[in-house]
Length: 116
Image: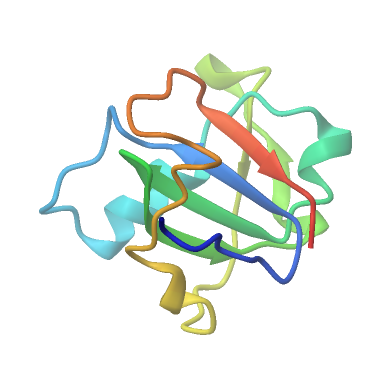
């Protein structure tokens, strides 16, 4: 059995299955991970790590602060996005399975884990 991944802070798993391709640049991966999510402000403001997940495996990770979240405008009104400075600090999560939180084939697009 795969050991449970532990997270040092509140996290959100963002299902990027539909837009992910193996040949994405770092900028493209950041853009598909960060934008146009339906998330309640009270929940997203607690999040400190945002993971882009494909088929139950972490493909991207970004450290975010409460101030990094903003509401989208235009055709994405009613959704939110984050902007952050990229860091290598949490890159060890890349490739790890989080299928216990977001299984391969999951239909939901946002899943939170606030347990530390």
